[in-house]
Image 1 (cartoon, protein in one colour):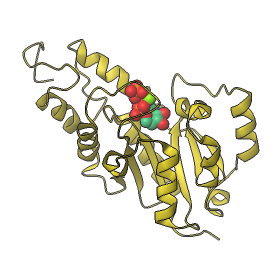
Image 2: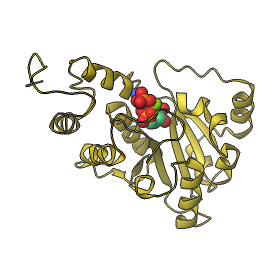
Image 3: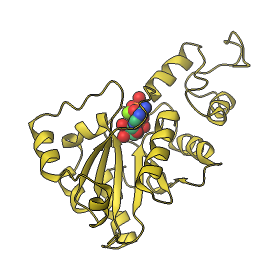
Image 4: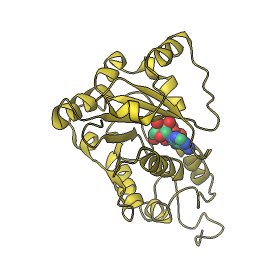
Amino acid sequence: MQLTEPFVFMGGTFDPIHHGHLRTALELQQWLQVKQVTLIPSGEPVHRVAPGCSARDRLAMARLAVSDASSLYVDSCEVDSPEPSYSALTLRALRRQLGSERPICMVMGMDAFLSLPQWKDWHTFLSLCHIIAVARPGYAYVADDTMEAFTRRHQVSSVEAFWKKPCGGVMIHELTPLGISATQIRDLISQGKTPRYLMPDQVWEYIKQHQLYGYQRGDWISDAN
Ligand code: ATP
Ligand code: MG
């Protein structure tokens, strides 16, 4: 028997959001058969260098990207919070908000999953949520001993098994592989090249309008791109 509608979310810097994020979220929504997948852009990230633009801009771009997709939702909880963006804090807040019975599932790309031991309080995560790690081109599942043991111990084999509990399971899943990264997009823009079709057009328009990531009108061979 399934407990109440699962809450599925994907955190990230989304600096900027791109089709790798969006397609991943949408394919998971279909595969897991949930109504919605929530994207949670980080405030000030703690595991990485400062983002290329403000949290408000990253949030605005994420909202633009999902504005016509009812199965994707952007939550501003981390951007609005005065606390640093630790997943452990977000998970505890979600659990308080949603109650102890509702399944919560955190989605992450393989690079993020394999780096989990560097995340604050990562050992508490499975007492608060399930984890789905999605394959990502360029990041094979080559786990160190810690992650190998962690995966083996908690891995479940079906979505049905996942939803029988509110938390505690790990699944590794393959989706349409899209080798897009926000780093690649930031690099293209700073080199005066277009990132068009790697991300929604509305997001690219926002970047040009706000002159983010070093974009400067006039530097471009054609601003029509
Ligand atoms: P950056 O290059 O700045 O690190 P990114 O493209 O990795 O950006 P993040 O915001 O760091 O994007 O990633 C948020 C989440 O989305 C992470 O769990 C990451 O693994 C996942 N992700 C990002 N791009 C992809 C992709 N192309 N396919 C699958 N998962 C992805
Ligand atoms: Mg990343």
